[in-house]
Length: 288
Ligand SMILES: Nc1ncnc2c1ncn2[C@@H]1O[C@H](COP(=O)(O)OP(=O)(O)OP(=O)(O)O)[C@@H](O)[C@H]1O
Image (cartoon, rainbow, N blue to C red; front, side, top):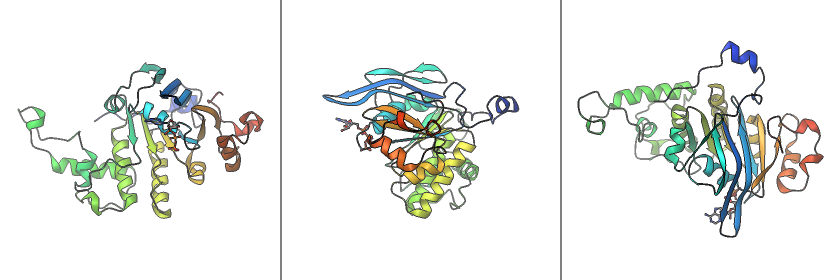
């Protein structure tokens, strides 16, 4: 399993007392991404910066290029131009596996959990723990009890107490609990970034609440989060900064503490020019 980022040390806390740490090198950065589908331009020179310790929400109208941007960052789409950097170093992400190897885990809208398998098996899917032995790893027996113990630990780390038994089949869980399993898996294996694509879209009020709390805990445990959402109250509740995508590129990065939801929606839809918003509406670290 990959190493977690070290908890904030006294030195780094002194250097970056504010959250997000926009003075630091972005953990994940996109520069000038372009993606065309025939005559449609999905990404028209899109930039994005994700800093340590933050939840960056990505908002935008339908067709603004949010999914294309997130697919590029999660290795599901190779852009025609532009570059992606992890900790300031350019990386190639030709596949979702390459993105995972770079420490970027994505929780997709269509949850990639296998309903008939139990929670622990889902958590370790593709990265199973096996009993020691002399045979090659695929021939050794699965270490189910260790996977269940580790699964319990990962669920506890995120305070997911509503799931009592990691041996329970995922199909017996509620939608919110399934989402929690997918988030726990991403948090367990992502050592740089967790991307969440519309994590509350299919959930009720109480379940959405739990997933938002979980998102905050992932950040507070040391992993920055990119949250794609159409739900403005959710965005404004948890985001440290709000990236606004319009017509394939970022047009503003807003500070939810200095900007109202109505203004964010107006920028998103093109009704307001972000340059006309007051200075406090703009977040640091997201140049236009
Ligand atoms: N595979 C594809 N083939 C052709 N056009 C595409 C493809 N994927 C995306 N597009 C187009 O690219 C543009 C951006 O799409 P994208 O899905 O990235 O936007 P979005 O902001 O995620 O939209 P939504 O909120 O509706 O999901 C749209 O005009 C879309 O129709």
